Amino acid sequence: MKRQWIYFALIFIAILPILLLRDFTADNELKYLSIADEAIENSNIFAFYNHGAPYADKPPLYLWFVMLGKIIFGKHVMFYVSLLSVIPAFVTAWIVGKFTGRALTERENCSTQLILFTTAFFLAPIIVLRMDMLMTMFITLALYTFYRMYEYNSTDPGSERQARLYRRRQWLLPLYIFLALFSKGPVGLMLPLLAIIVFLAISRRLNTTGKYLGWRCWTVLLALCALWFTGVYLDGGSEYLNNLLFHQTIDRAVDAFHHKKPIYYYLVTYWFTLAPWSLLAFAAIITAYKEHLVNNTLSRFFITIFLTILVMLSLISSKLEIYLLPAFPFLVFFTATVIVKKSNWALKASVALPAAVFMAIFAASCFYKAISEHFALPAIELAAPLWCYTLILFAGGVAAILSLCRNRIFRATDAIAISLLLFIFSASLSISSFNKYIGMKEGCKVALEKAEEHGFSRFVHYNFHTSENFDVYFKEMLGEEGADRREIEQFAIEEIGKEDIGSLHGSVLFLMSRHIAKDPELAKAVEGRESYRYGMSTIVLFE
Image (cartoon, rainbow, N blue to C red):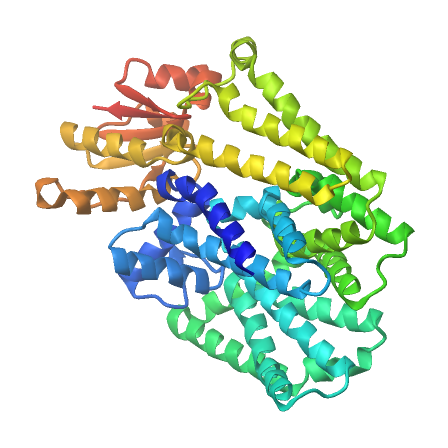
């Protein structure tokens, strides 16, 4: 157990510079902050709006935490909001590790958690602020609670303490399922319920479903949902409630208006969402099938959860890579149980390939300057030459290959994972120089200063996605400066057409630099104007 917490501490340190130094992204993250600000201003608790437009896409739990941070700190703090993903990630890894207490040694468990934390789309939701990790934590807690109840019912009655734990879990199971629903929406409800039913069916115990999903479970779920929907009705009215219950659930599932993808979508995205371990997990599934290694309750439970989530999400019309996140912890730990049982050439080769890729990345980085000049790639602003950072990956790749030669697969995965975390830590110390490509805080600061300098009070954008949420920055900056700065009454950034640009007066225009480069008519409209380039955007002043 002590080793596990040391690993967790080191992983946290590896991502700490990102949590402290990076800006909020201009799309989803800034939108959540703007919605939270609007809710605080209008005293909304259950019904949310984005610049007056109903935002019934997401349940309130995550937004409540964001609002709490704003109330406590007086502004949105990146480190605090990041913890809303970081803490659930560590809890998820810890809980899944508890499943394997008898199947893996402590060292093997820690190695598996390193694999999990360096999986592309498990690491990304920790760094990029979304509510998916919060939902994943509650789904994992629900499935762990069910599994312990299943174990209790599959053995002889234990002590009175075990009986008390069982009775407590009968209440905790529906609570966790509801919190998963309350974090992200219907998927949080459907995934654990369907996984439990499918597992019981495969285990030929479907007739025991009532022990887990009986009257107590449904009473708790229905009561909590009734309280939620009543709050929504009182806060947002019948139209908002209808939007939440039908438009955002049934319509999105059957015929998505956002993120509509084909049924095979996740079979394609799997290979990069689980990188660099996608081949290893795939090899583990094939090995388990060929060698008949799904021969115990735990392995059967893990693979059932993964396949159930994969099939269910594939059948839903709306798809994003991140939606598969709840399946990854169970697939990764299933992979570990296979490695322990069978260490064959396929598993070794699937680890050797990412090790070789790491070494190739180092070789390519030595020529990055020439490559970037030839292909007109953006310059990478780091404290040291790029090869100094990729040398860490090279060392990890070499160590992994040497470990594989000694038939130590977990040592090899450790080498790859640790080198990747060290690379992230060292490179992220320079993340401030990348903020102009991540967010728009400094760009908005320039725009606000120039607007006050020239006496402008109007902000507009042309084809600049989510720029309406820049009001988060404007309000914060005005609040920080206090009475010495002129109040700007209208924070809403208006969208305008290209034909309106030439007639602008007393305005600050936000637009993407690439649009100017590709559109001669647009370039002519802004030609000769005072402008400022910030990352991939351009800020133009119209006297």
